[in-house]
Length: 211
Ligand SMILES: [Fe+2]
Ligand SMILES: [Fe+2]
Image (cartoon, rainbow, N blue to C red):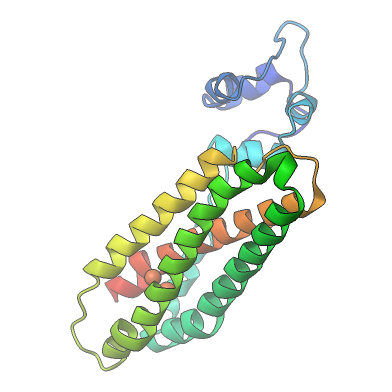
């Protein structure tokens, strides 16, 4: 694991992904001058935590194995009453944020925002139909202890992850570098929904669907 007080050189020796990632991000660094990693990242508007995630040091699934102790009923109840509503309300807030910001800042960055907003709307459509299918069909069948075919849901999960990956590339991991408070709020919410969705999908694919 890196820590924020390391020099770039120390960080590079600790994790082999550091240098390739810095190059990919187009970040200039001076090994000989023993620059510290955190200020170098900061100059380029990247937080230390985001960088740790980029080089694969944070595992967003690490704490999810506890759900293996849940019963099928408990797990489905949690997904339906907590996870689905949370994601629907987040995507609604993101949708509103985009439509307001595009109206307000159309001259500065309207086009740039719209490219991302289009994908957000695709994600919203996917989530709404996916959750309703789970709640109305697959989960009900599972609760009746029937043999459920999860193939469709798994394919939809992949599609959803693919859409988040596209947004991640387009926004440089939710960092558009625009000096607009509303856009920063949308970025934070998109990042939250991204992680929430990936964890949700892990719980279903790796735990619930294998019960
Ligand atoms: Fe779900
Ligand atoms: Fe799902």
